[in-house]
Length: 568
Image (tube, rainbow, N blue to C red; front, side):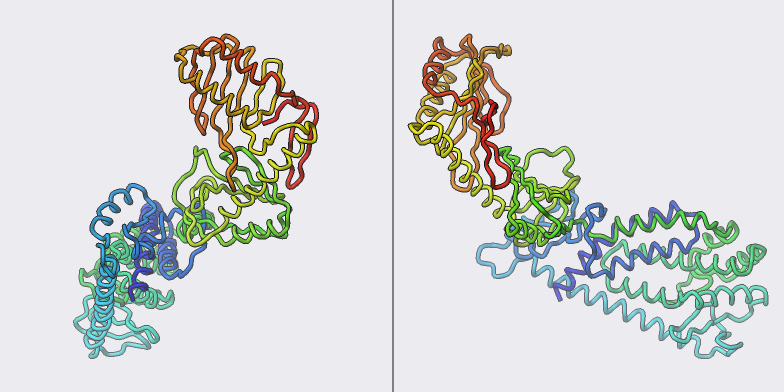
């Protein structure tokens, strides 16, 4: 029972946003046909009955699981309203009061949910009992009514006409009505029957009984009942013509009552009579152009509020020829062309369960950008549980191995590149030392690019760091002519790409610009001790120039290009 109540609770909260939208549109569409309002309330009912909704990235429903199931078992329970400000205000208090103590066998939130379920059942039973008792009392009240004709009855003691019954609806009229008023009243009540309003109102009350704990639905039900009467008024005026507007308004006033007849019967003079009189007097049939203009509004409202905030990725493996994966951390690209790997990535992508978290506009930095070619669909994996597809972030719920699988592919790719790179270097220089974990690329003032071996990179790195640590901060920018450029990297680790240690520009005047951080923070300018520049030149003077060598990869193929200086 707790599971059922939790489902209904989250569904009621999600539907509340649609109720607010309908209330706002109801005010904006004051001159529109009142049947339009009923259609809007129909969307609310549909949202409440919808067991599973389609996910849409443009849904305006902030969250469909305000109280997630996992919160019942969490060490620090938290809501997910979809609105950061609300989460920030509620979650600290919730975590403080509902966090289980050491040794507790049950989370306190589970206990409160069980109690809430019991209260909900009591409220549901009370609502249904009220509906049944009020109907029985009304039946008893009209037991002495005498038939007028067909399904029309006259009854003493009634304050207003109404329709009673679902399968065989009967019209009950108070005694003492003049013929003109009676004709208009009968047209109204018969209109209720023709339009099946005697079904819609009880159905609306049943929904309210199930979701009685949602205050916005009480407001929605009251407004729905008013709109039901307004729409029926317009139905009568369209049928009888404009000339009956004043007599009809007079009939409304004469039959008006502040008494609520029952939970379900539709009554002629019940509630909102002032609004109904004004609406009747200014009524004009709506133009076809206006009705056609309202169709896009309903379509838009359905997309925005009948869908869940989420994303469903459905790439088709048979249409994907290759997958481009770009590592945003290292700047490396990987092209996947192996059919088995493509099908595995597509399968994992289709299995993703995504819940929208927030807007991603202006965001930079990520792990992997995945693009399916030639279809062009793409998304960004920020981490194992976070995905970005503009303009939103999504939280990955459930189990997924996509992030780890792509990382594994990159690990294999990097190992293959390093092995092939060493093979090419040994082919060009058989006496070259082992550089499987090469650390540094040097570009000297003559434009020559040199690959630095492990030991030499260590020596060079220590020299630069030593000079850097003894240098003095220089406030102005450096002249970068006649410059040695160093790009340091850490040794490769299993399954991981190289990470930058930093970049150094060493100028001929023994000054340098240093950026020593993994993400290229703002560079600082230093004066170096005399001789640093020449010391670096001496260290690398015997390293053979490899100006004409550059390694390039396309998918699983490796190419050796000539006449290029871009080694990195």
